[in-house]
Image: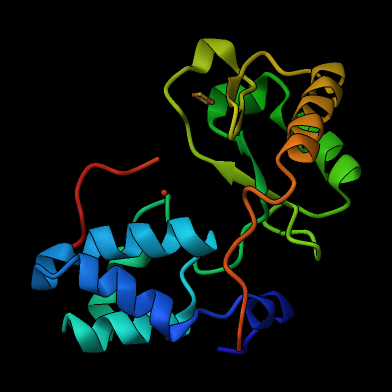
Amino acid sequence: MATTGQERIIQPRVSDIRKILDKQSNGASSLLAVLEDIQHQYRFLPRDALIMVSERIPVPLSRVYSVATFYNAFSLKPRGRHCFQVCTGTACHVRGATLVINRLETLLGIETGETSDDLEYTLETVNCLGACALGPIVVTEQGYDGMMTISKVDKLMRRVHSLGSENADAGKPAQVDAAATDTAPPA
Ligand code: FES
């Protein structure tokens, strides 16, 4: 798998991953907690970090990837500081999720599934969130926004953007020196 430019920008520090692993020392049963800590620190799970986890815990790398790809809270690709998730379940789709997605793509300058080059924004779709009567729904770090329209998307963008300016450095991922959860984990 090729390394993207964004992955090159955000490389895990060996010492940081060691610290996380030292904190969680219950062998294979700590795998989930370790991955959560790494995701929290980098906003994604860098490949080199997963290899370190596999060797240190130890568990097969295939098992690490199996868990990392099972939970929606984890990402194998860098995510932006602000993540927009649009529900594309049937009810939200019927109520105009596509218009919402199109508007977000225009405002963010990225396609669905992409992260902006400056690592500010990510746009994703998610399956039914269980609140269909409120569709279409957009999820951000500020929570759920329901019954979205194009003008509501514009307002949401302004809200998220102003929050971003207040906390410009707070959410930056660790730099180089160099989690909607499903019901059961994979076997
Ligand atoms: S389809 Fe979007 S919440 Fe159910």
